[in-house]
Length: 152
Picture 1 (tube, rainbow, N blue to C red):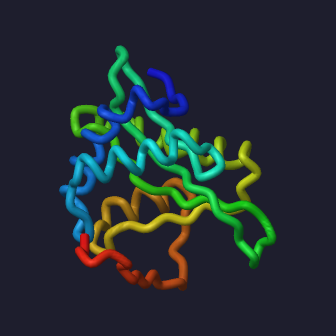
Picture 2: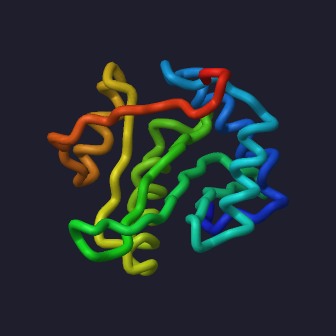
C-alpha cells in the first residue's frame, strides 16, 4: 500500500469513492459529472490543493483532499480538508489514520499552518476519529449560501 498524489487518470476511481461518501452525507448528493469536474480542477491546479490517494494492487482504496487558502488571522497558508473516504472493504484496518497522518505531514510540507475540516453534525464516528487524530472542536459555526439556482 502506498499514498501518493492523485493524477488525472485516477479521477474515475476517486469519483466512485466520493459516491459512497456523498451517499452518507446529509447535505450532498452524488453527481459523477460534478465530482469529476471538481477533481480535475484540483488535480490540474496544485496551487488550489492536492488530492492524496492510497493505492493497493493498482486500485485506489482511500482518498483525501487538501484545499489551500490564506488565513489573514495567521498571515499564512492554511488547508481545508475535504472528502476523506476509505473504501468500506478496507475500513477498520488503520488506513484512514495513516492517510490522515500523511495528509497532515503533506500539509506541513506545503507550509500550511492549520487544517480545518467539516463533518456532519450527527457523524459522531467521524468526530471521534478526528479528535483521536489530534483535531479539536472549533467554536466557529459554518454557514452556507448556495449561489446556484439548484440547491445540492
